[in-house]
Image 1 (cartoon, rainbow, N blue to C red):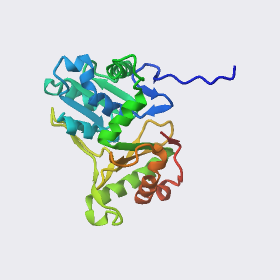
Image 2 (cartoon, rainbow, N blue to C red; image 1 turned 90 degrees about the horizontal axis):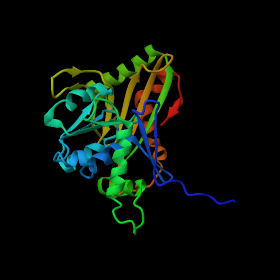
Image 3 (cartoon, rainbow, N blue to C red; image 1 turned 90 degrees about the vertical axis):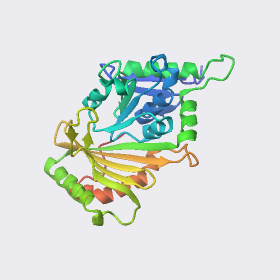
Image 4 (cartoon, helix red, strand yellow; image 1 turned 45 degrees about the vertical axis):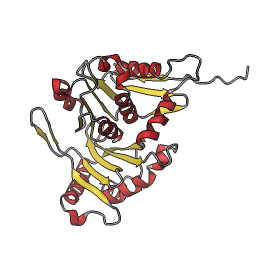
Length: 291
């Protein structure tokens, strides 16, 4: 008929075992980092949390954007930044002091303490509950996923985010690159002088429950404005190592909040490649995948 149908107001996707999830609005992609922050911000709309007096803890993996941090700070919710790997959430989930509890990773995993694993179906149901709470009057225009996100950014600011994966990199060369950045982190006199840094470090995590320490969990370059550059090595690729570069550019609530994330983080990416000398170490001048 030539008519163009409007897309649904909400879409959701999962992987094969439904532990990972993707949330979509009308022509709108919700990053996993934003989804986590917004579920926590709206947790009082979800009966499981409301009936138990609200959240007592929330956590994200270190490479996940820092959007969650601002929500927890505003709501006085104990916040934890863990290494990558769902196992690091386990002790927090099992500790009554921190439950009810919500956690998530940038790799599309979101969950709570109802089960000790990612739960994609739970995340979808959480978003349906948030939508229902924002649309109690059927006579009014639908408040959609994108509207909730826009209101959130107007309150907390926006973390523009992207991940660059460099797959099949020679492991020895990748390790040398990471070691150079670790050496830089340890010697403040070598920090790049053309930027104002909050900190540069090699991330390590002390479990608040059992005191165990996990060292060498990635390189963090944190700018004074809260923006972050993160490097990690991953062994999950088929051949060689995968260098993961995470770009997290913070835009305050008074800034421009409607730009395309990949455009916003381009300059941060250029800075990251300059700092790391990734092309010189690996011979790679572009990522295999951008998420």
